[in-house]
Image (tube, rainbow over all chains, first blue to last red; front, side, top):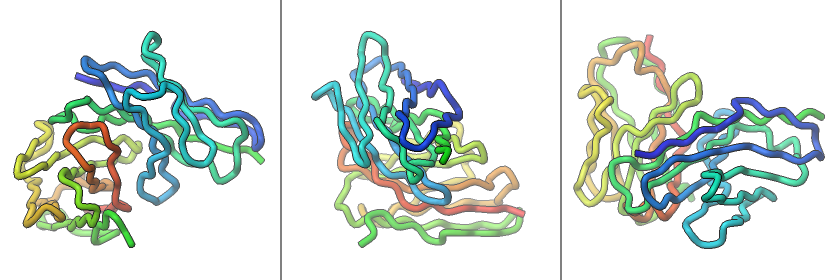
Length: 115
Length: 114
């Protein structure tokens, strides 16, 4: 079985300051990990993915995440927040090898950007 | 050109009705999914479909049934709709069954049962 825990349901930062969205995972297999973003009333867009290559992964819009196996974490960061970053962010784990589990989503972190 | 498209975008219907949501992907992917997003934004997989193999999440009521006329389509049929079925339903596809590649999502269908 696999699971994802997003440690914060809401994160609020000021525009121009760093963003940290925390994610811990649990998996019996070698996982693939993803971060998706959902803007209001929109579908989900992939930000970045980890699939057992480099542990520091760079994504779109200046986001990056670091896979730390020892800490079972995959936190998402961005050096400087922009107003357009306000959205819901989902950490996702996929069992390598696929199967019935499919993608397991965290409960989401709502990112608020203060002007 | 939309990669994964769902129709309709909004669906309002009465309890007890039967409805369908259509999904098409033009990415040539082998695997398609249906996810349900509840009012708290939590996403949960309902079905995975790959090369004629259907994996059903055991918590999904049998009133829900996926239909795949071909590899590019995975439609969702819902019988005897209930108030609790109100949610946003997302279709998605991925290149493989292996979990190594990301899933591409449609824009969602907001279903409201009244």
